[in-house]
Length: 112
Image 1 (tube, rainbow, N blue to C red):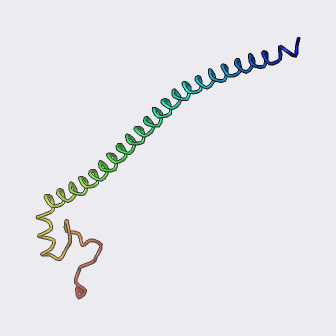
Image 2: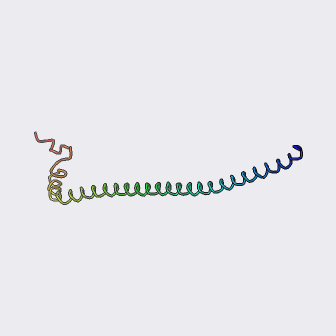
Image 3: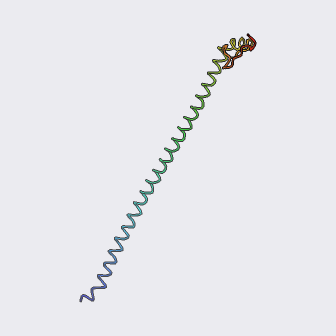
């Protein structure tokens, strides 16, 4: 009698295993879809963070360059505005800016 039931039991086990395996594959498909969406979202946010960081870095570099230019221009403007009269007198007397010789001794050698 047991020998007669073996094919039925085998068929029943195959149906159960096939059903469970099919359910498992369907669950994997759903989970992998969710994981894929999550991964795409994280990659997108990582790219956005990198782009924001790159933009901030470019802005900081540009601001730094502009600040350096502003300082240079400000110094040139201040020097030109304040020292124009001194420069003219200094050039006539053989001296550099602000009546200084700029580290060079320009006194005549035959003073003695």
